[in-house]
Length: 173
Image (tube, rainbow, N blue to C red; front, side, top):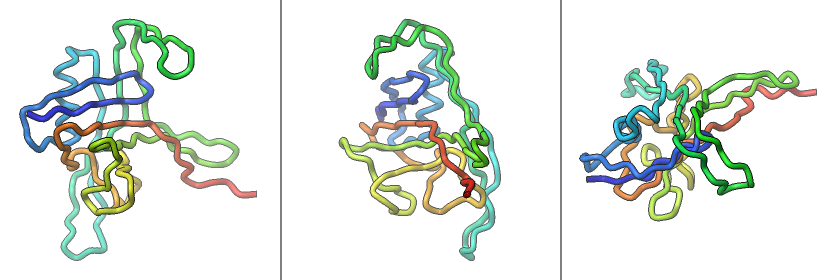
């Protein structure tokens, strides 16, 4: 049995999720959260093919991407940050692309994994002090990020999803 704390920032979802697998992926935890929530938690995903790599032995593969999360909050939530009570109801947060003052801004899902109280390095490449893995990588796929259907979690990990804004092509003046 493996227990993971799953948080989705912005839709007020924060639960401990237990699965029977010893090596669950991020996707496995999300699937179990859907089952455990009895219809109060869901996500939308899409599949795409990765771009061919410049590495000779790297095949094109299917990569799953997250598009949105939804959580039905059953009871009002007392403030933990700021002073605003979150009312019971349906909360949905989706990826989007907007233009602001000539710049294209992408709001994309990213996940972070915390192990033993510390953000862990990306197990796929060993890059950086943080595991920042986009749910929808920019094409061509960057080798420094692990798709959520491939990243393996350990018992006691904390999995945090955030919808972050990234300036894709900043306007210059």
